[in-house]
Image (cartoon, rainbow, N blue to C red; front, side, top):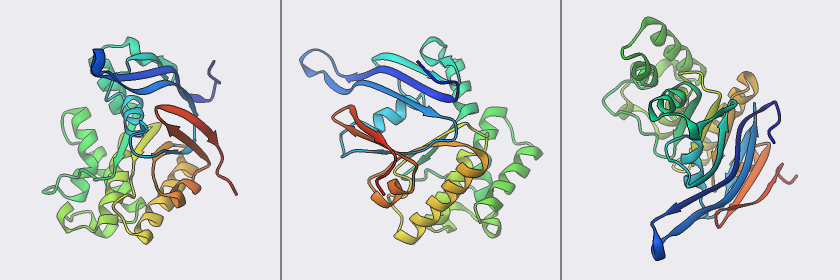
Length: 234
């Protein structure tokens, strides 16, 4: 049973790959809810199912079985077209490898989700993209191509891009995995600021204990099952 403030609820979720004797059970009955404004870390060793769970939560992959609701909508019962529209409107993504377009400027990269959604660039989108880049501290890099940015700057552009369509949920898969300690801490400070000010929900997959300790909830996945979910130990 979901609480009114829950924006994501999954129940009994499983994910298998392959068939017959070659079936690999990656998720084994996941129950999880995320309240609006959550800042949660998803932890677990490699192969525990973290990336698979993020992909399903982001509607990039369908579960084998189980219930998946977001914002009160049963995502297992809508068409692929509606699912794509839902994803573009309500979910943002930040990846370990920022996946910026190298030949586009910071501004153009941030605008990209809006341009895809609208089918064209708009003045309003350009203003919002510029405002987001100012917010993430890159006002002096707006016109720079991605290839001219440092690793930390690229990841801040990726965060701004994830926020472009004002999503309720941002899923981040090892967003600081390729950054030095100082850059990683700066990215996490930015995430906490956005979470606090906008009440955007963040779920961050990470192996970095310092990043996890900076979240208000730690969800531990082991062998396809959630084995713990609690605030970080003080």
